[in-house]
Image 1 (cartoon, rainbow, N blue to C red):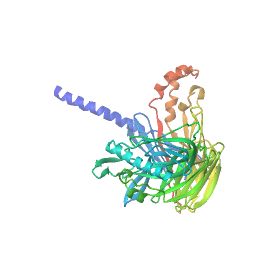
Image 2: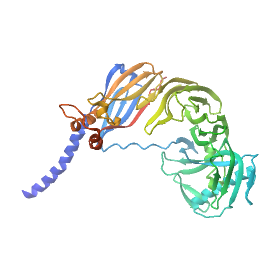
Image 3: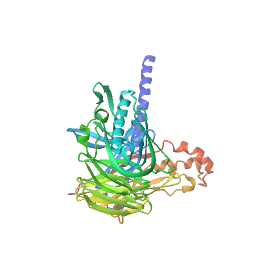
Image 4: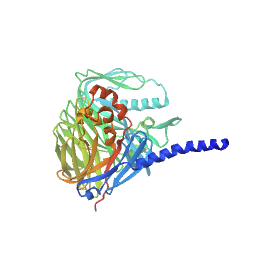
Length: 514
């Protein structure tokens, strides 16, 4: 009998956790998650898909709202937040699919043709010679980093009284998307050999951003070039290369801010196949110039370039003049197709965006970054535009802030997911940290111009129950009076940690209208 008892105990011990997991899984399958209609016809949701995760530290309920219907799947283990993907573009290079991204860039200061140049003996003393020498030293310096050689370069200094800012930009090719490492290589007798489907290339971006004042170029023995100047007298424009890829070409521009002196920035086009075939600069020393420059315009203390995007078959250049955003569309040959202005209440410094596509056009939702108040409150406005197949821009609406946690443009409508605080006893006095006030979620479909509500429904979840549970620890049932805030601050988090939360929310417009 005792011999049978031990296996039975072991079997029971194994069955208990299995049963518990099964029971918990069943409970999570019963988790509240549905859309409750409030106003309008649910058919307004049909073109949209909403996906995300609702989970705690132990369980995860992934969901998809598609064609107005909810699908769900329970899993164990907290859903990890998807790490932000590196910005990259897919292109066909040599009949193979490659992923292209910008890596590092290096600011280069060169004297103008009419600058007064004073060079130490043995160093170049004309603008063309300096430019060529800077590039050769850059290539050799990079090669030395890979091969770990330590050759000695000519040293000294070159002084000039005025010049221009240029950029050297690294371009990385990968055969796999979102690769973490840059380039895999080995030192070979014929040079630096690139491995594992990775490749490093470099382009020269000829911005026209002048500066005035004495700058000294210090040429070091390891091949590097350092710049010394009195920053109180020499004001350099702050510029960062940004770009996009469209039909096998890389289009770069310069995101400019604080341009103290008037300069010129445009769009610089590079053929990706030619760039790839040029080889690594530390092997070939070949410098790639743009095959086409267009869309040039003045940048100064008020007018900046913010970025460039591929929208359908067109390029969208985003600029600003204080509180006016300027949008320009171009075709791939560099011809301007349309221009539009968006007025904002405050100056715009940066933006993020999301895009939708349908037959005959695209929708773009911009969030304009406008600085911050203190450390926490970010100032922003949001604009929706449409771009048709001819590149014509239509401004749909601009609203202050972003009254949603997710939104997406459709061809004839606009969907947003709102998060609203619940009206509970004690309210913001009890939950005076706004991030833990019980929340409700609403899906609202607006007309394209954001003037009329076509549909509104609540995304009903059990998430609010977690925060309501804090009342059991801090409120008496008789009085519903909250305890002192000091006690709440020091002890609340043990009740908050591990509670349900929404993550990886994604909203898309799916319908292709013919």
